[in-house]
Every structure is written in C-alpha cells, then in structure tokens.
Amino acid sequence: MKDVKIIVCAKQIPDPEAPFSNVSVNVEKKEVLVDAPDVISPYDENALEAAIRIKEELGGKITVLSMGRKVSDTVLRKTLAAGADSLILLEDPAFERLESRSIAHVLALAIKKIGEYDLILTGRQAGDWDSGQVGLILAEVLGIPSVSLARSIKVKDGSVVVEKLVPVGYEVVEAGLPALVTVSNEVGELRYVARTKMMALLRRPMSIPKWGTRHLEPGAEALKPVDLTELCPPPDMRRECVFLEGSSPDEKAGKLAAVFKELR
Image 1 (tube, rainbow, N blue to C red):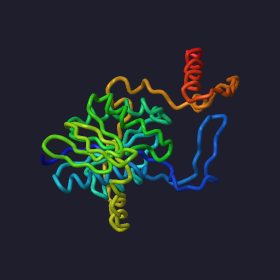
Image 2: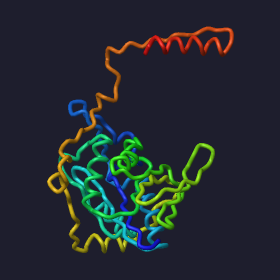
Image 3: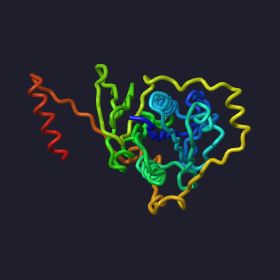
C-alpha cells in the first residue's frame, strides 16, 4: 500500500514537567490552573513519530489536528518541522474544558470535513488529565475499528498491523483500514527538531486553517464542559465498612455475594 493518508490528533497542554507548586485550583470558577508553558502532549508526539515513520516507508500525507479555546500555532508548528504536511486548528470558546465525549464529537466532525483518510493516530492518553478515552470514543463515533496501546504500527495490504501492549507483553492485532490506533510511548520519542529549522519555520508567513463551530456540521454546539464537582462524591454520601467473617474463602465469597444482591 502506498501514499497513506494519516490524521494525527495532537493536544496542546501545559508542560507536564512543571512543578506541583505551579498548579492551583480556582474554587470559584472550578478550574485547575497550571502556570507553565504550553507543549504538545508527549503521547501525541509518539503518535506523530509513528506517522512519520509510516510516511517515510510508504509515502503519503500527515495532517495534524488540534483543538481548544486558544490554540497556539507557534507550539504546534513543531509538528510541521518534524515532518507533518499540514496543520488544522479547531479553535472556539465552545471548545474550552470539554469532557471526552464532546471532544471526540468535535474531532469526528472535523475529520469528516477533511474527507478521505486511511489511519487516525492519537496518543494513548493526554498528558494532563490522563483519561485515555478520546481516541476510542472517536473511533466509535466514526464507526471504524480501533486498536489501543500500540508499541509498533505497520501498514500493509489495506490493513494496519499493531503490536498492542498487554500486561504480560504484547499481542499482534490486525484491522482493516480506515482505522484508529492509540499510540504508547514504547513507539519512541518524536525525532529531534533542530532549533534553526524551528526558528526558520516560525519566521515564515503561513496560513494555518482555523475552524470553529460555524465551520463544522450541525451538532458541534451541543458540547458539555468538564464539571469538577462531578468528579467528587456528594458531601452527604455515607460510607460504611463491614468485615465479613467466614471459615473458608467459599463462605466469605457467599456472604459478599449476598451483600451485593441487597445493594442492587
């Protein structure tokens, strides 16, 4: 298979290497604030490196897709310097602090607008919230097969062959194209981009497409932001600890099953 069309989803996040002292919580706005420079999420850099290797072997085109309220093309031009062919920014106030399903929904609308693709690569999880949900939800929304936790990716004969990480090693999984793969750090770090090359790219005038809700199909406006209160148990929630006694594991298991039945 030649000329593989690849879309890489790359999230811009505060530098995860920032010290804890730079992190604070705005109680009134219910926001987590990080006083650190923005970078590309490290796992998404792994995904870009995997895409570049496929392009070097088979040819093709890499489109990088990134979304947020205020997305910096200065940070994301690093993807172009490394080897991507085009960059599209999804930028809109409505895209701020979205939960995973809403993010996947917007990305799906943008991918449909882009048109043809063979492979979508995302990081295994984001470097800020670490939820690991968006990639797999995105595949479900698009109705394409997905493989998670890739340590190696090969494209051949209209399919993608992935070495997928499992607790005791890895297993080989094959899926037909188009498909989505979430990439782990075992793939390898993004190749070094020379400072001179990066500075030359930043000085060069460049028109980078920016899409908001008005550029996408109807539905991007029905988005749900993250609510930190949903991540906490209700303040009036009661907790009880019960010790189940028994002379054997089977007897203890039976008592535990009885407790679960009562709670249903």
